[in-house]
Image 1: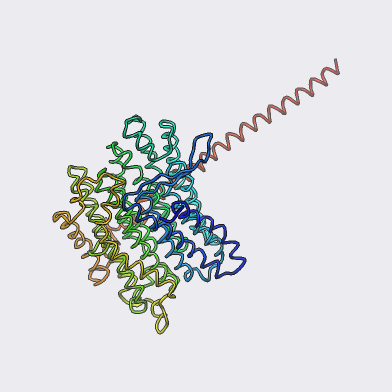
Image 2: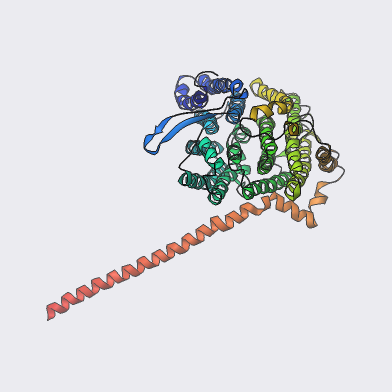
Length: 601
């Protein structure tokens, strides 16, 4: 381990963000390349810790911060924190490299690189924090950065609304998290993760109060990781640059909630009701988001719904309360980071070249963008859990963990996971067919005879990520001893190999979801309009296209409801003021009459 690596891994990007305006004054190229190089340096410090934590090192390094409250600033160095920090810095570096080409002609790049560096540094600081207080500070910085980057194109009203929506909706979850942290502190006198784990193990904290606390903590995770019912901000967040979308979905913002649950689930895993809620919310979210991806033509929104669904898988696994489920969630988090970063960056190349996000205006791009097409297909196969790509290994591990759980609870989670896998393959085939296959669109025809692939600085990250989509799937045996310091592994054999029955169901789901999508979107055997234009299917399509009317409900109840209540209160206040004014004028009149009457006497 390089000296001070746990601190420098997140301090360097944060300090670097404040240097960006200075570098912009010196040279534009220096401003554009320095953020990438700083995150590379951060990655070097992070990866230098891997040999130590893999061999069993685990340490809580802290310094005095606020003596009056006995608060310390610290870093927790174990495989979970280093694993997360490594993912954030590595993928963050690739996205910043890609940004040099993708954002080259944009205005406001100083602001862009400032917030991107701060975003990455805050996320690394969040996962390295050894206490709730410090984690919450970074949690809020991450939220601020997401708001600023989603609304980066502030001249577009929809981008401004999307940034505000993300900020407001996630504040609901953040308030829940703050309440949970404060309740936990008042019951234990501790913010430190290891100290809290020890108190729980010794039974020093009451189970009733802890159950309430963890549900509030889960509320924070639901907001940040866009789970039902607080998922509505993430699809609209696609109004930001595609590089921002890739960073939010693959490495930062939405992964913060999963990390929080992973860090706390093994502390509070005795609460069966809490774990049931986590798994149930994850299962509902995974299914609903997958169905919504079938009813949108915006390529970035399809990927956004896909992220929400895959995060649901991770929550399902965490809610199982088993070591195998916990490990499966982290393995899938890694798989998702690679294939979702790849898919977003491929989408960015398409949008960069065509200037549209509407998949109906694409079509026939395969021959003009061979590298983008090949890497997009690799990412799609990973998302769809096709062997031997990484999504197959991690998603299968989640399904096997649920199947082994047994009982109504385990089989329910397993069944929902299998059905969602079928829908996932369906919307993935739909996406590939609409974008790359079929007849050439007018946009595609304009690309004839031109150099249509993106610059090398954008293609290199795609190739690297495509490689990891294939290679990282074979790291599951590496994870078992590495995470043994964080969790108590039940049986090593449970993590090795594949069980026949859940694997059969998993592979069969690909046929169930893939065949209809193939006939409708690739072969065009069944006209889509005939399916969705009439009757019950038309109703279903409208429900999915309108996100199950969550937004409409929130607008009706919270937005219009607040306006109505405010209007009524204002009228009441105005009435009170008017009454007071009349009373005051009447008093003045009486005083005048009294004076004149007294004078007459």
